[in-house]
Amino acid sequence: MHDDPEAELLRALREGARPRPFAVYELTGEDGEVLDADVCAWGLDISGECPSDQVPPGAVFVGPGGLKGDADSAERVRAMFEIVGDVRLVWL
Image (cartoon, rainbow, N blue to C red; front, top):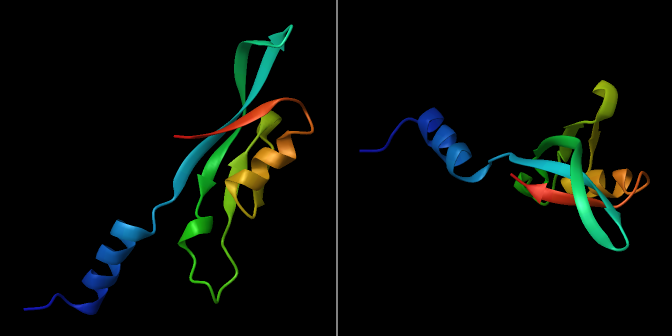
C-alpha cells in the first residue's frame, strides 16, 4: 500500500533536500602561524538541492553587526568575506 502523495513528497524532502549549516571563520595569526579564529558569518546553504532547470536557491547568512544577506552558495559567502582577511568555510 502506498502513502498519500503529500507524505511521499515530505519523505523525499526529508531525505534529500537538507539545508546545510555553515560558518565562515576569520583566522588571525602571526608569522604564518594561525593563533585564533572568530566566526564572521554563519548560515544555511541549499544551493545543491535545486533541480538543474531552476535558479538555485543559494544560501542565507548572518554576519557581523546583524548583517543579513543571501548569496548563490556558502562558497560565495566565503568569497565575500575574503575581503576582510584570511577566512575559512566550515560545514557544521
